[in-house]
Length: 248
Ligand SMILES: Nc1ncnc2c1ncn2[C@@H]1O[C@H](COP(=O)(O)OP(=O)(O)O)[C@@H](O)[C@H]1O
Ligand SMILES: [Mg+2]
Image (cartoon, rainbow, N blue to C red):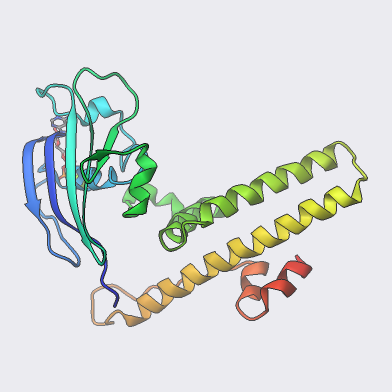
């Protein structure tokens, strides 16, 4: 397996129940064990702040700052990976009202939280997300798209381009437009981006299935069998992309 990035050190200050904490972590799977309320999920929440957004619990930052602290919180992670070490720090300072949290990468203030994406992607699947399995397919697509982003940073832009083209096409339809040149241009763009999106999703699922296949089947859990069903997705695995675009 290729060498993967891992968090080698995590330091927390006034984060939830932790006034201060520093832990060293080895590569590979890590298990946190402890009594209810010990602060296991808080650690996962801290890690979830290493990607843009509100984190695992989507909590207001004021709730994350330790009760009895100065109103701020900070966390710092050292990442070790194939390209060496990276230091990422994030948090809010006390007295700050709701708003952005600040991010520092290798000691320099980042322009935005998005800059963290250059160094790592964080994905979580928690019991609160069980609707992912029973809910609408659109939710599963969005989750899959987050996974795809981890291997293909261009995927987000493709999805935006597709939706923009689709909105443009809908607008033409609502206006009753008969401008076939416009339709042709928009539909060509939808076909190109749509097929590229389907191909990226299919590739992600193929990679995941291959990883699952390599897992020893001696563990306590049955092996998962994952797949992607959809007209484009079925075609894209055995038909050249240009032909799929044409049909789409
Ligand atoms: N802002 C905060 N300040 C201090 N303690 C907090 C804060 N937010 C949550 N806690 C404490 O964190 C604990 C819950 O931690 P959690 O990580 O959810 O536990 P578990 O190990 O069961 O996953 C509770 O004891 C709660 O009081
Ligand atoms: Mg918990």
